[in-house]
Length: 222
Image (cartoon, rainbow, N blue to C red; front, side, top):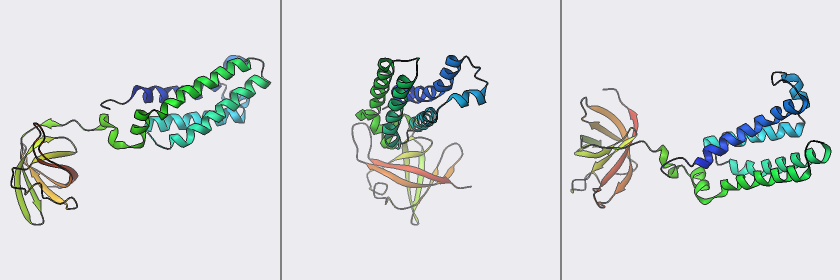
């Protein structure tokens, strides 16, 4: 996905706001000020507080795309359903029909986390394409040093985290090992010396040339 799914942004906000709705409802039902913290807290049941805690945790997990969200969601749904049942059974403000519909609604929207596209971006960082640094097409001279051997070529594109280096057909660039630590010198307006490693190797395809993707490791002072 080129952009973060709107569902995840919506759900992180929805879950966190839902947690805040517990004390807000208490204030409304008992005509209290939201600033009467001690009094509002005394009206919240242990189950209310448990629900609030799980809503906050799930909201933060959604915001951070933490895969542990799939462990918390079933517990949260059970807690929400139990809380709604008790509210209708022992309270006088809501009926079982109202709280039941609320529970069904919450369960339905939470099932959205199990959609194939949503689950994929939560469980695997490589599908979070919106987080990929922007690449610029730039042909810049580059020198790569590996095990005492120096190879000269030029870049095809460059980003903040790496470059794609063209293999000119001699195989020197393409044959660089994955496990080697490289020293590269990029001749920008001011030459930059960096440590790097081979991230991927790509054969020519369409307008994309044969070459290697290099990931920057850490800068070295000149």
